[in-house]
Figure 1: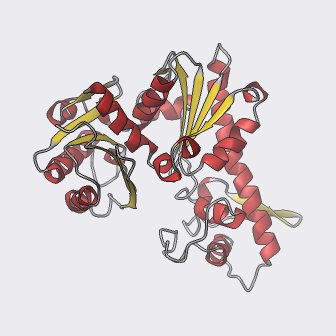
Figure 2: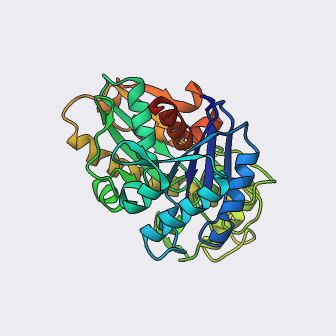
Length: 340
C-alpha cells in the first residue's frame, strides 16, 4: 500500500468533505436527508476527482439526518454507501474511543461512530502539541465544537451529541445554515421590537454576507431561497423575516438588524464557552481555530480575559483555507496515516 494514498471523508447531513493527504480537498453540499440513495454515487464522484486513493478513513455526522429512523440505521446506511464507493479499497472508521475499526465492527457500536468527527480533529490537533493545555474551536456551516484538550487528548464531558449539547461542547449554530429564527424571536426596530417570521427565509449566511465576513458569489446558491449569495439577495432574504420586501424597509435598518442578530449568535457561543472555561482547572495556553467560521472564533475568544494570553493558532493559516474548512476530513486522514 502506498503511504500517502489516503483520503479522509467527513460525511455530514448537508455537506460532504474529503481531504487527501496530498492536501487536495473537496467540500460539497449534499442534502443527504433528501436523497440518501444518491450517496454512493456522490462519494464515487468525489473519490474520482482526487489523486489516487488506496485507503479511506471515515468519520460522519450524517447519521442524524431524518431520513434515518435511528442512528444505527444511519451509520449502517452511510457505511454501506462508503463500501460501494470504495470499490474494494480499505475502509477505516474513527470511533470516539480513539481508534479505527472496520465498517463491520463500526455498525456493531454505532454510538461510538456517530458524530465522531470532532473527536478525530481534537485528537489530531492534540497530538501536534501533547504537552499543552489547549482549546479547539471549530465553527462550520451548521455547528460549532468547543473542545478542551488535555495532555494531547480530548477532555470533554460528552461523547454523544446530546451529552455535548448539554455540556456546551456542541453549539448547534454555524455561519451558513442556521436559520435566523433560531437566533431570536424578535428584533429591535425603532422604539420597539418586531417579531420575526417563523420561517427559514434567511440564515446566518446572509448575516455574514452583509458583514463581509463571507465572500459574495453569484455562482453560490446554497442559500435559504436558492438565490445567489450576494449582499443584495441577502437583504431580500432578511426582509422576508419581517414579512416585507426591499421596497418597504431602508437598507440601513436591515444592516442594523443583521448586526444585532450577529451579536445574538456570538452571545450564544459565549455562553457555551463560559461553561467549558468554568470547568478548566488549568490555564489554557493554546487555542486552535478551524472551520469556515474562524473569523467568528477569533471574536469569541476575545471576549474572555482568561484567554487573552493564549496562543492563537488558525488552521487556515497553518495549512490552507480549504484544509481548514475540511479540517475533520484532513484530521481523520492524518490519524489513519499515523496509525498505520
